[in-house]
Length: 200
Image (tube, rainbow, N blue to C red; front, side, top):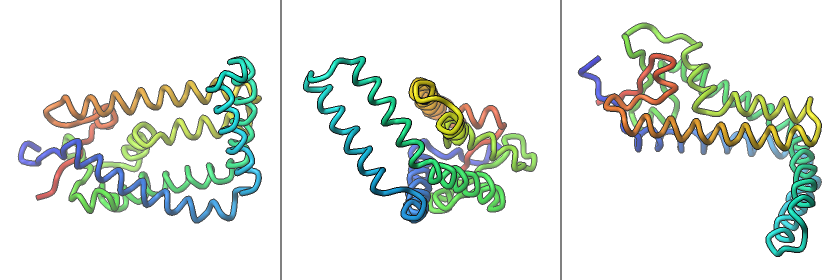
């Protein structure tokens, strides 16, 4: 393992950006079929107007929070079908495709990166599933989707905000570990006993 160079943070970030562009293009194609465009535009406009009123001091914080929670919940319900498709694409791309493609996504291929086992054991689908649940926010997206289907408006707003804060905290912690460790392994790599290498 010592003769294999660990991928840098910048290389990994570049590969991820390419992967996210690909996924965004895929989901945007599906969005035209599964999202009620008129309702979506109406709700996003309401959200912008509400924020503007709050920033200008025209409404109280409690009024803003109550109305924002309603709009947020309605938006989540409107885009629920797209959320299911997006999570499916994430699973197929970052778990199944990466596993079948020997530890590479398209972004990793471009940057000549590969996910390998840290102890030279063969990687399983579970390794990629756990990595993706953490670093690609699949777990958080599943929780938020479940809340939009099963939860009340108030429960959804508060819980989804908490989940998003935890997601951002986790991504920050992963970035710090990749930047600070000599072997460039993030928390998700340590948990799954993997590492990302640069193929020369």
